[in-house]
Length: 246
Image (cartoon, rainbow, N blue to C red; front, top):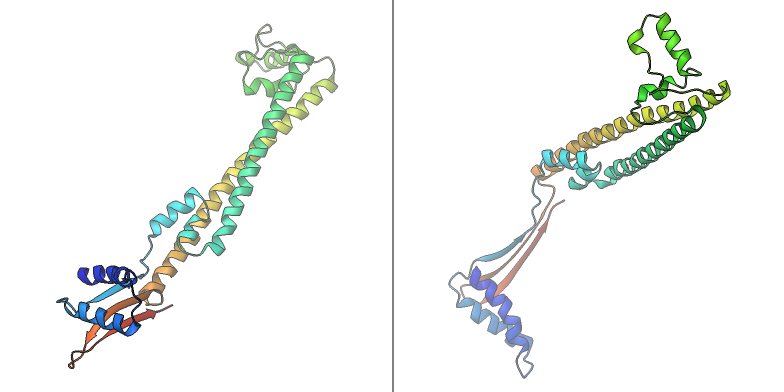
């Protein structure tokens, strides 16, 4: 078979390198003569593109990394494209919501510094939530003292704040609520991103199973074979077989 391949590659070069153009019949006879000298004259050169079965594990991994890629792996991206588009939209929403929430956070912190005399050093999320509910630190501490929750009282110097009016406090509270709600909603977007991947993986497994079943039933693939057949009268002929199945 190896010799036949070499001859088939070399023969066209030899033919077209001749100084004189020979009739096609002469070329055919020359080819038959030279091929007949090869011992394995009945061997065939076979070109196969029989499709291999696909791995469901890989389909799952692809879909988890990027929804729709598992379907692409299963040769069924016509359904996988919707998961890819949904993933892009969700990522855009995720980024946009994070940007907006952080922008609102910067706004309410800056507003508190300007209107309530707040310093940002050593302040946690609970502090920023608290100052939106009380006009000043004294009001907060008085309430905690009345409840006998002395451990929750703030140091008046380190945690000082004082709103000039209730309107300022309400404006601050509105910005804080907007930021917090957006951050909370981001979690739903993250959940949607994960769910989109899970559904895509399930769909990819289904499509890979269908693809493999089609192969098992012999519905996919093509086969091409090339060979030389010798006859009792010492004549030979070329045989080319091209078989497809879908």
